[in-house]
Amino acid sequence: MAQRRHHYEVALESYLREHRIPYISVDEARRAILPQITPLRIAEGPALKAFDFVVYGASENLLIEVKGRRIARAGSARARPRLECWATRDDVDSLRTWATLFGSGFRAVLLFVYWCEEQPPDALFHETFSHKGRFYALRCIDADEYASRMRPRSPKWGTVDLSARDFETISHPFLRSAGVSGRCDPAPFAAMEPIGA
Image (cartoon, rainbow, N blue to C red; front, side, top):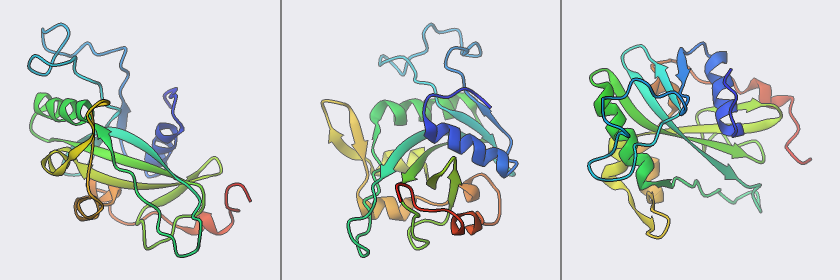
C-alpha cells in the first residue's frame, strides 16, 4: 500500500483492495511517461497536475482524482448534511487532459470521499465503509460532466463547485463506475460505536 499523506486516500486504497479492484496509485515524483514536453502544460497554463489512482474496470479504466471532504456530526436528527463538492479548476482541467493523453478506454472521474463523523444514513449514500474506526462514503462524478455544470466558487483560490441539485443528478456510486456490481456490505457498521461517543 502506498505511503499517503491523507487518510482519505489511505481509506480508499484499503477499499479498493477489499473489493479486489485492480489499481495503481500515482506517484507524483515519477512521471516518466509524459510526452516530450517539459514540463507538460495545459496549453499555456500551469503545469499539469497529477491525479491519484488508475483503476482498472471491467469495461473501462478510471483516472481518479480523490477529493476528501468531511461531514460533521449532525446538529439534529432531521438535519441533512451538506455535501461539499468543490474542486480547483486546475483539478478538473488537468484530469480531463490526462484522459485525452491516456486515450480510448480511459475515463477521468472526481471521486469524493466523505469522512463522516457519525454513521451516514442509508438514504444519503449507496456506498459506505469503515476504515480504522472512521466512517466513509463515496460519490463519483465524470470529469467532463462536472466541467459542463461547474460554477465559480472562489476566483481568488481558483475553486469551482456544483449546485446541490447538479451534484445529486450527476454523481453516482463508485463501484458502478469501476464496473463492479453489488453494494458495500453495511454489516461492519452494526458493531461500531459512532466516532467521539
